[in-house]
Every structure is written in structure tokens, then in C-alpha cells.
Image (tube, rainbow, N blue to C red):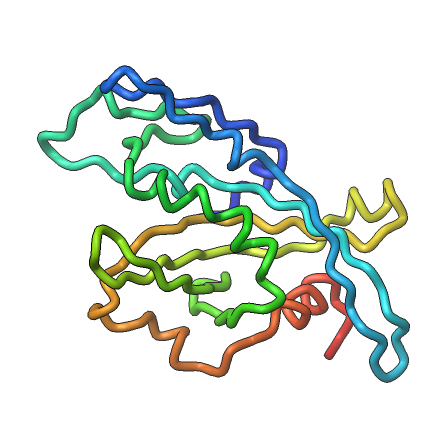
Length: 188
């Protein structure tokens, strides 16, 4: 699951579901918010502009034999199947991302990060696992004179809470401000 940094420019087209209803995807259009990093040691406090993009895997899934091909969501790099449950859960993604400062994040062996939202899916306790990458956005930094990063939500999917947590979650949590500092190469 690679990074698609262009996702910070992606405006997903609504999905015309075979049931006749349109599933709007405007909630997964890029968004920007600011995180304030406090002054530490030899560094003054600074504001970081975080521009967020949401990848295709946040509302689609791989296909399997026998799937209804009317559910194919054609995209730039791959065609995947629209997934109703991932879609329903994706409605909360913008708020989850905006609240990363107050959440536990974990480094993943795949060079990305993970946060988990506990949720109730049709009466079953589940984890909503959200995988994301953060990168300094050099061009935007130069253009605006601000400290800028791009955050790509690569994938988000539900997992029954009885399934073991990913290896990354057994490590110490990492704060979102630390993740931003690392992306900007500000040191600890």
C-alpha cells in the first residue's frame, strides 16, 4: 500500500450505487487544519499546516470471485469495489484525523502510522483501524513560507475487536506532535 501524495488534490466522485442511491464522497475531499507545536529547548513554538488527503482504500475493498461488478469504483491507479461498511465508517474520518493530537498513534513496521477508533458495528464491538503517512510538503512550505505537511490516510477498515492488534500497537504510542516534528525534521 504505497503513498499517493496526489491524494491531497483528489476530489472523489460520488458513487452511484446499484441500489439507485448516490453515495456522496465529498467528506473525503482534502482538508487542512493547523496544529500548534509548543516551544521546546532551542525551538520557538510554531504552527504546522496539515493538508489531508484520503486514499481509495478508505471506502473500497479488493474484489473476490462472485462480487457484483456494478460495485466497481474506477480510480486513477486501480479499480476496487465500493464497500458499504467502509463507506459508512469513512464518514467519521475527517473528525478522527482532526483529533489526532488527542489520540494514541503507533508506528507501523510498514513505515506508516496507525490509530484505532473503537466502534459499534451492528451490535459488535469493533476496531476501526486507520493507517496514514505524514511527509513534509517542501513545495508548499516554500510557496507559503509556512511549516506544511501532507497527511495521507492510506486505508481504514473495521476489524472485530477479538482479532489480535497489529504488532505496532504493542509498542509505545507516539504523539501526533512528535510525528509532525519528525516529518518536518525538527528533532525531538
